[in-house]
Length: 285
Image 1: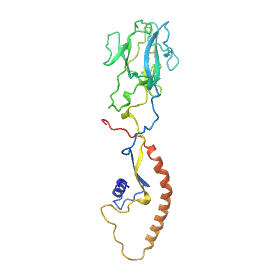
Image 2: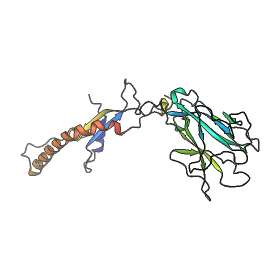
Image 3: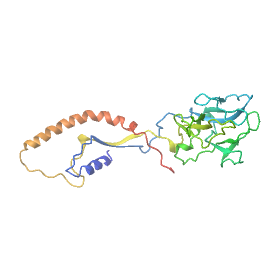
Image 4: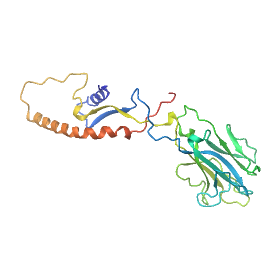
């Protein structure tokens, strides 16, 4: 049984007889009651996330399961310590279902000024071999568990990490697609040169309040079924006279419209819900 929402909408928009309504259909699309929520996208449990991050000094071996970021995006050495011995970043990525506490944020602090890490962050001040790194800027990571009520993508774990270099004369490097820049730069070292930057890319949001769900067609009204008069007033009575030539023409047009709409009806309604992938749980639900 129709909920009348579409009929009321059409009657309201058609109330002004001087304005012609040319819409082919009205529809209400959403999540029906007493139905199982189905995510619009496939499960993200297999999506890789940044499970761990470490520093590898000169002569040290990369830990098993880690990938060494040896080069910048433009093919240069990606050492994050240009003021002394080379130090490189190594990352470990795992499927999200295997990483209980992935890295969710990174930051740089000024080690020369003994700047403390931000709240919830831990500084990486030693290499995998236990050597203290003599770097002017220290890399800090956070594994903060996101608030279940947070609907923003910033609560998602990191997925990949990169070391970048700005072109000569540029104030910032060119970011690869989907990457965000970590605030601050690494030390350019005593010989000058272009400083290194750190960037990261986040995994797709996967929380309940961040997920889009499949919608369904709750109500629809075709042009052929549209109400011709407002719901608040009955149709005006017609005099018992033969139809005029103009009325006969309108009747023929109405017959052609009904035939056209009958063919059109089967195509649009099946595709409409998937064309509107933006239904989310409300904040605080």
